[in-house]
Image (cartoon, rainbow, N blue to C red; front, side, top):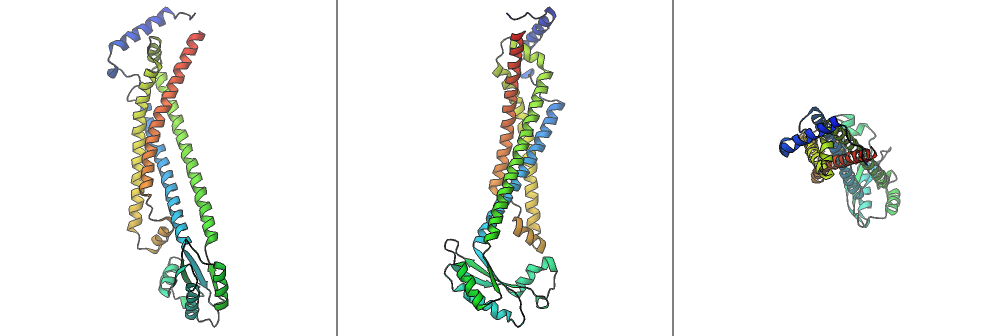
Length: 328
């Protein structure tokens, strides 16, 4: 048999129960709609969502840029001709172009002229460079068919016989390193995202426990007079779903503003050599439709996760009340 409550406590609970029954549900919510803890939780969720969206955007940017690099590298090979005493560079470039163009699987071979070479070196050596004064290698860009690439060993042998100073780089080593780097970056980004979501869950658990502690007498009375656990849990779930969506939406909007700002800055600085190099490395800092869809999914996931976490926490709390009641 369950031990009877003391007379004073029983009377207090009955009074609270009568007051709860007299006041309409919408006017007497179980969870206070606005308090300091709720505002702090919204801010925490907004910050965590902002950081999560930035992480997701960075992962998307790295993945898309790596895919672009891989696609470009797979379509091109480079013939490099190093200067040497007595070497006619223009004739050597023409010979390398002719040799490469003669192989099946080579779509075209283009010589990088002097002006283009100067532009490539300008970010490091400055403007007004005279490449005749420096032993600068010259390049021939070979465009290949990705579906049927040429026999690179045969191309190297032909180049060695025709132009001994020439070397062919098919970029396979760089492709392998690029794929490994992209996979590592994506793995790290996903791990960081999971940690942020876990921190958000813990924040919601503590906030839910605090809200229940502040309204424990009302929750216990409702529970003991027959209110179902799912009704009480639904009240908390609705409150924290709204709280989570507010914070997540604020963080998501802030992240989108940052992405748009970076994209705008990148587009406004396309004319400088430094911006050209940055664009070659990272693209135009635009995460694309997939990135913005990912931001929306993160916002929705954090809102749902907040509601589900509060629901499970309340159910566990009520289960503990039942256990203590029966044990007593």
